[in-house]
Length: 307
Length: 119
View 1 (cartoon, rainbow over the protein chains, first blue to last red):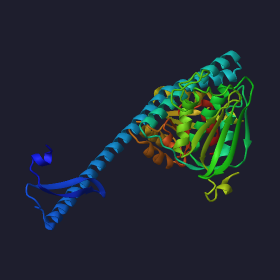
View 2: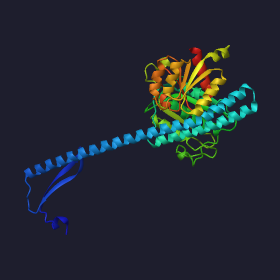
View 3: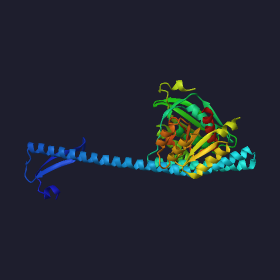
View 4: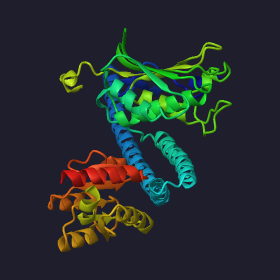
């Protein structure tokens, strides 16, 4: 025996319950008498349903605003924490680095070659630690949803030349090709960080002496125009099993010594710009990373500012 | 000679971390600059009132005075300012030169020398 029979329901009026235009349920009035409800009862029931719907909508809005305020508060607190942490860690590293630099400067001035070499090695080791800390802080920012970029008009080819300059002293030269200027709408500091990560990855996987190629250009397709950086190396390429996960955090290739954050952060930086980072690695032909950010050529006056 | 003019230049270093303050002061001293030191913004303003330097090198996050207030007060003297901080939110502050921490000493000394040459 069903509930309707159990309750002795012989007639019912049913009206929809809408909250902010969306059907959420129904309001039912039932009676033990046949044909109990009049047109007037139905209109009354509709009014009740509208009223319940409006109250529910208000309650949900309040709930949503409260949740949003809590989220804003949490983000502010997280942002504050990361800023304080960055400042404190900087305060530990700064004096060490300054003293090593001072030793190096003095060794250079007094032409003490062995001390100069040791001071330089210590300085490089400290730089690696500094980059690791900066990367971990960025991972924290990404986790907390407070990783922000400030896009502006930049010339990608100039930025590529500046960034590559730091790599020219190493065993693998960086050869730059492509167009100039390449206007982009991007955060120059973040883009430099992404490109540094791509270049150091390419250098790390290159055979001794083999140059890394960095191409800069504009590309247009169906979804707009993109300013594109392409980094190609002549290394063994990305192993096929690693390819689907290469932009995940803490993923490391066999030749890597870091935490596996460089490509992950580069890809997050591209995404934060509304762009993309992709990799193409046919077996035995090296790896080719392509970083695309929105082009800035619609910005008036940009070409006038470019050198 | 460059060194001779360097010996007469006065640099005020404002830094609440004593280890960093000592290191920067040691480096500037070795370059032949005259150096005064302050441990926070209030202290720095006191030093400025005693003797106006040719250059100020200042941290941002220090006790007793906010970074914004310190920059605003320092501008009154029209002296070149290098902000030395790990907080890159200050990297685009108008009218000052930002050097991120941990800083490269060669770079900091180059920036300081350039600002002193311009001034």
